[in-house]
Length: 213
Ligand SMILES: *Cc1c(COP(=O)(O)O)cnc(C)c1O
Image (tube, rainbow, N blue to C red; front, side, top):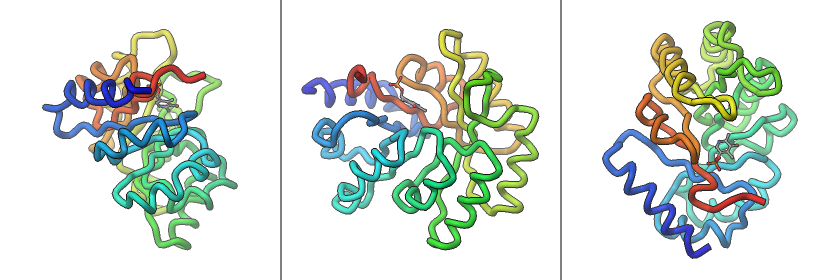
């Protein structure tokens, strides 16, 4: 736990000259006591995977630290969308129509527009979330034109145990085709490669907070 701040500052140093890269500190499974040193250091961007856990952990902290941006990284069920706005400022895991439609409804109701990444199933893995590459352009257009969502970029989680680089390159090409500026890719093991390939949001958990049990 004393290492958290040290780990955090090492990464901050590594990316100090990458002015357009945002570090999302991924805090899932860790209690606020573990995260507070990083909050007190002035860091503003934190990522969680589960809505319920995030509500319990972050609702009051966000009131104390209004500059904090919370990022939802995990699979989002439509029946949880009502809890997600306005707690989360970013959603990285939009990957289906029903969810897009529900977020659209909720953002109008709450008058709060989250920034959204479309998750792409870049390795075409059946067990993984994300829009298929072949559906991406249509889905993107629908999100913007019909649902009026604030889509800022694409997100991916490359297949486990494979070299991420080729998947990162593919995501960057898809982003360029859609003229999207932001890319959410890169985790503890591959964030430097992700930055090389154009990532603007790296999501780092274990390299800051330690292994999750
Ligand atoms: C847990 C998680 C991360 C962080 O993973 P680490 O390997 O611990 O850095 C990043 N992105 C998503 C979507 C995650 O679920």
